Image 1 (cartoon, rainbow, N blue to C red):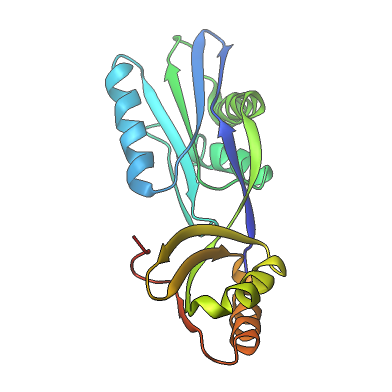
Image 2 (cartoon, one colour):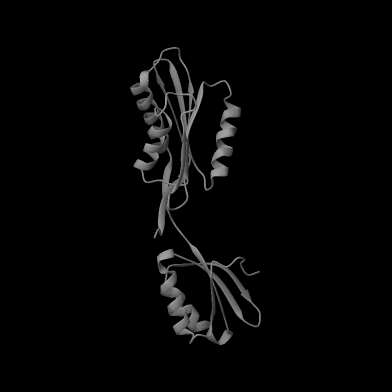
Length: 207
């Protein structure tokens, strides 16, 4: 169960030349495949005269969504080396785009692998990396008289208050590490004597 993941806190950019070819690498933080593809299309439009736009990204805290593209380079010489650099730093929600302007001299498969890998590494080194906490939302609804007991439970866990609503009852939506959700629900249920209504992954937050 994933509680934390590493991603980019700021973008990185690097440029290198190999036998006349120019490689421009950009490392970006993205949270969805749609965002990644949008960034790729924007770079294609901006640098439409380039020979290749080779890419790789890994998405989701678990890192189980990934894609790479050699974009016309010999199979396996661009996308996989880019992804390998992302994975080597244990990153997710990360996209790298390496744009190549061909310089007239072929690099060979080994040269291409090194060029795309080196450009990616330099861009990632130029970026800053942060560790983010995965949060599962849990809604807790209880009577005002149970507020002190509920607050005491919150102090026992790593929580982030996402939303509050106070009417004739109190409703909190808190974000918990996935590994702590079961224990939190049980502890809150016991502390409030079963009087709390607890909802995992509520469809809407309080207003």
